[in-house]
Image (tube, rainbow, N blue to C red; front, side):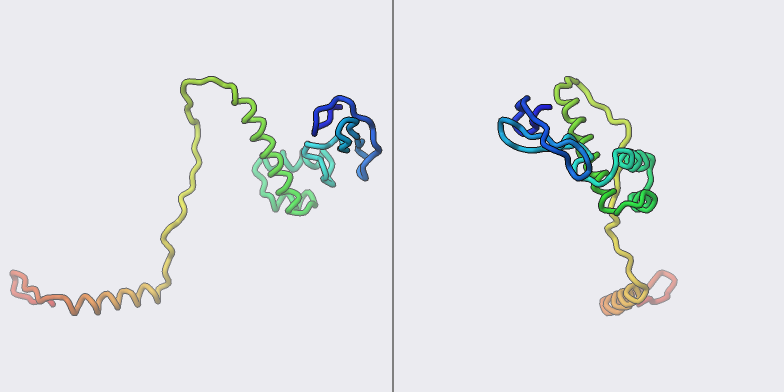
Length: 153
């Protein structure tokens, strides 16, 4: 196994972690690391099967809180697993398309969300604004006489 820090190929076994995974020590830089280093399972108290179940259920559309209840895991743990998986997927995606040559790109689907900008006002506020407007506009209003002879004002 190569050292993830200096890429030196000479590493030695250096005991086990509390979870039982093998630890290694680099002969060149002296750093120690576990065999799960730089994976989704590193420093997590969940089994690979549980991580797989959480990610599969999330891909199926289950809510994060629902996953934490069903899997009997903390909400923060579920969110952390999903975030780590999405970051790794983004890294893999970026590596795959880096050397891709293309002339045109077409989008198949587009999701968007438009924030509601207008807040709903209570009836009391709307009524007060209407009365204020009526009072202010009645002062400025001029008398208007229509052709039938009625006067408005």
